[in-house]
Length: 417
Ligand SMILES: [Fe+2]
Ligand SMILES: [Fe+2]
Image (tube, rainbow, N blue to C red; front, side):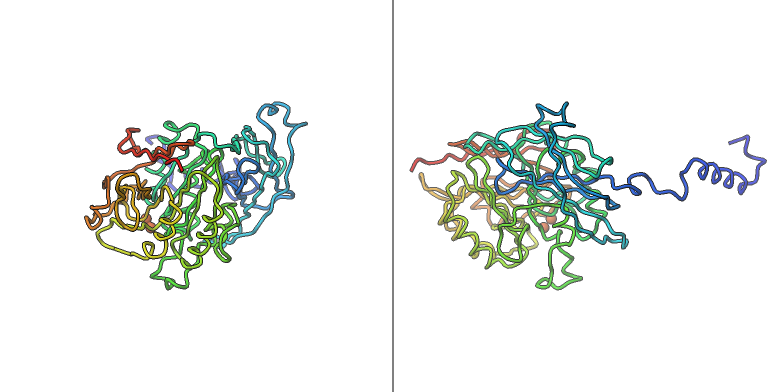
């Protein structure tokens, strides 16, 4: 700094300003903002993940012909002649600062089961890099997936660490399921930016199965609870099965994956309509395993709130159709129940449902002991993720902490008819 000490400060500032103008760093947008570069690329499972695959992304400027290209990985080096191009659907969304952005989506159809594909998205010549995914086999072959509870706070700073740990522990996950409250304020696009920063390249390879939490809705202190609708940013960011009850499409849905029926419920609205829909889906189910994911827990462990709505609306249906596992969040602690039926632990060889509450972020609640008689394990102040390993006869659930240590496990056996 010594050599500047006789030069007036305003001359130094003016000099730097001119340098920035000449190097193009003032009055021009960054390339990512000026061109239709793809960002926030995310895979989602379809209703038939052995035959199709959904991908969504956004750009800050609309292009001429947004599209996705796909090629079997075995032909990636000849992609120019082998890739198939699929035109994208595009919608325009106004975000917080009144800017318009453009969300695009493609569903790759007529894929081969049990096959690794490479794909890229964009608007020629602004393509993403190639990423890879595997289609499901369409048979009852073993597979495993990852389940996260609420991340919600410090998503970039700490959530990112859990995501990286999950990739190291489960490099072959079929998909990643988030049980809601992926961020603290879902209507705020900046929090979506933070989430995508934290998950980095991972949702380009591990399809996301998102469950709507209450934090993906507007704050009830601003909009009355019964008038709230999911953030307008939810549907543009994802391309989810459209098979839920009317009005709840892409927030309530079901899909089949190698012998498992996976059902996502939306605990924020219209539970009666969802209960009716759930009964219909389960009455037609032919899969070996049934897993339900819903953000708000059936048997809450938080000391400060106790909502029993789901016990009345859902447990009779879970019991009747012998649902195997229910994945939940919301209470910022960890809990695994014993196998339950009619709100009690089952005895002998009777079939019961195991309910899990998970927490994957650094926000922690004080736990209540009100349902301790139903619990096999509870825990607080842990950031956890979980693997669920599915095969024809057993379903193995394991909880891992940030140190990659398994801290809880249960194996559910499929009883012979
Ligand atoms: Fe929540
Ligand atoms: Fe939460």
